[in-house]
Image (tube, rainbow, N blue to C red):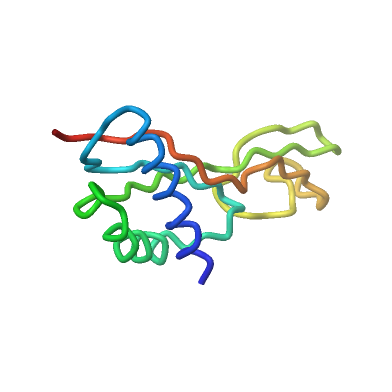
Length: 115
């Protein structure tokens, strides 16, 4: 389950930011998860919930997961757009060979802090 190591890394980065800014309590962390990241959101949320107690000020912290669709383009018909599911055929012309752009990243996009 690589979600546990990802959750710990997210908490480490968030903890570093909290200390940098002098925040003593972090109430929530929002992450953007790319379609191709191979992350199971339920497993990431579970792992985050278990690991947060290891970080002072994160004991009650919630994780919000935003799904980032992939973008792709078709070299045959020059279609370009967003994908909400992994596919290899073009949604416009149906030909195989769709080129999927990067969408495997996991990024912290926001943190809510308390007193």
